[in-house]
Image (cartoon, rainbow, N blue to C red; front, side, top):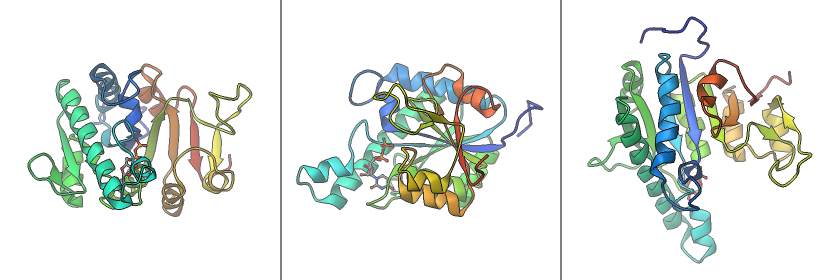
Length: 245
Ligand code: UDP
């Protein structure tokens, strides 16, 4: 793909969003205008010529832990959670294609009628051709999360960073929604995240990122133009890496 922006730092990135980011103010499920808004954020980065992978959670529909807390068998509940991520991936595919962006939904659980199976080399080829690859069904294994799936796929696809879009503009030392004095980190190390139990991603995802020196950039997806700005190093965000700054 041509480099359309001389100031561009990243060639290939992975955007991770939670399922809840797609539900708007509804409290459950999918809110199509919100999905479209995020698709537009993705488009603004795609327009720069950046190759984009996406992983979307499933928490707006079903989480395995919640199901198992209510008496459901854990692995079955986790498979249901993985299926929820496929629905979200299809919603994002539809919103991106409405903006004329070519996409592929690539599922870790084979379901050939709705999504491609995950074949690493094929996914890399899609990226090279400018298609947004939406990785669905997590890692395909119970007891994992989509944060771990995002870290795994970002490593496999040789992404330069994971961009984790959240409701807040970075990593805080306590929950900024509940504590007005919460302080945001500009930079934080993987080990600090693990030791202080900071709310970034679960421990397996952080360890996998640390072992492969994959930076995680946490930013707010609620900020219009946020994703493109953050890619250019503008705005507020937190970088998780092994560099204490
Ligand atoms: N899940 C799983 N294995 C994976 C990824 C996800 O079992 O590799 C299940 C798990 O039950 C999880 C659910 O899918 O609760 C939805 O994913 P997640 O909780 O990561 O979604 P998010 O919180 O990002 O919306």
